[in-house]
Amino acid sequence: MRVETLLRAQAAGDPLAIALVANETRLDYGALDALSDRLAASLTAHGVVHGDRVVLFMDNCWEMAVALFAVLKAGAVACPANPGVKADGLAHVLGDCRPRAIVLDARHLPLCQEAERAGTSAPVRIVARAGENPPSQAITFEKCLEANAPAAGARGDDDDLAFIIYTSGSMGRARGVMMTHRNVDAASRLIGDYLDNTPSDVILSVLPLSFTYGLYQLLVSVRFGARLVLEKSFAFPHAVLEKAREEGVTGFPLVPTIAAMIVSMKESPAGFLPKLRYITNAAAPLPPAHLATLRTMFPKAELYSMYGLTECARATFLPPDEIDRRPGSVGKALPETEAFVINDDGWPAASDTTGELVVRGPHVMRGYWNDPAATDAVLRALPDGRGKALHTGDLFRTDAEGYLHFVGRRDDIIKVRGEKVAPGQVESVLQSCPGVREAIVFGEPEPILGHIVHALVVRSDADLTERAVMQFCARRLPDAMVPKKVTFRPELPRTASGKISRRLAAMEAMPTQ
Figure 1 (cartoon, rainbow, N blue to C red):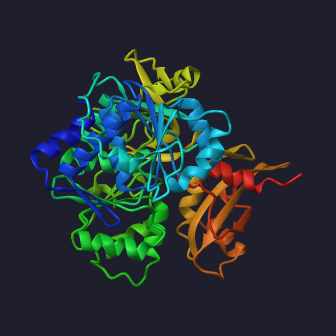
Figure 2 (cartoon, rainbow, N blue to C red; figure 1 turned 135 degrees about the horizontal axis):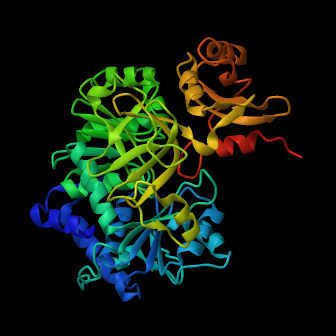
């Protein structure tokens, strides 16, 4: 099924149901469908044809949601770019996907112009929120919505590209992940099914629409006829949660950083969101202390721990009734999906043996745009003779009952005196230390030991000392895993998507020449 047909079906079935709430704007399904039709017609009138790429460079807003579906209705490929990137990051996206058009917020125009000076630009520029003095040689978003001609029907089939989604770049230069309509249809169906989403759900999302976890909040909502409450960020948690209470939010996807901010809100009473029925986490496992506090604050909400990556959207989930028995697990594979650990020879690894996680399923990407070598490196056949699998590069182990446990990135493993140290195990202990709000560790070169474990820590207690952190870890970890250096920071280094970055942490710690 093509993705835009999901919206058409909801608009035909219940056009007055609210689809999207963004700031003061409320769009029902009929309006979201009609507005995206008009923008699709304008894109077609300005030369966008089947298979063209259209970059979307906007914050979370109703215009971004309209533009996503409009691009698909025009038969083109949506390429959402994180509005938090710098000029060189946008220049990379523009140079890589060579878009026919770019749809952007007026406030991003200076950065866009700086990026385009690198030599690549989009022939068509559509600017939203331009005000009374729109820039020259630009088409306004508002003018595009005045188009009367209906958009052409969907062209192509399920195997057409729907999205090119750029990775966060946490391991280097961002790559464009190619997702077909068939991939997206499968992923949105499987995710919504295990969350039991229905038209009565109201989902709060502060996650960028430009990245997979945020994008699928919109896609799953539309597929199941739910309402999405879209916020730009979680920078003002009290205001966001008050909006969630007013809207009767039932679903709340978060990441550990957001969880840390919520649990620090000591004045938030238990039951503050009385209709909240689930919370999801698709990043690193939440520290047990955070899990306990979230349960106290939201006693009726079930907690889903999940694992996914841009290349397949989602691969595993842990049923909420298992989280107490195995709080560090991300569960088992989604239905219709295989997710298993392999050894160095490519065969399934024995339980409690660390190896690489591989994934097969209808939601696995087609490959990386313009990068066949990188595609071949991660989409490789296994010796079982059953075809290619996505090699995630993530190290996992499987417990005796078949549940998956994240160990770390293959490239992140730190060798201390010849011993392998998984950063995630150290970080789990650090995050349970009283006075620690967030932490990340990496390997720092050391002439005698090879590497030492260096921890960057954000304190919730200003009196916490480096010695206290080391002593806490020493009582709970083998010597090789104990950080030999602890640096306190007001915040941890992040990629443009807001993901905590071990690579950036290590780079910042390198001595200047």
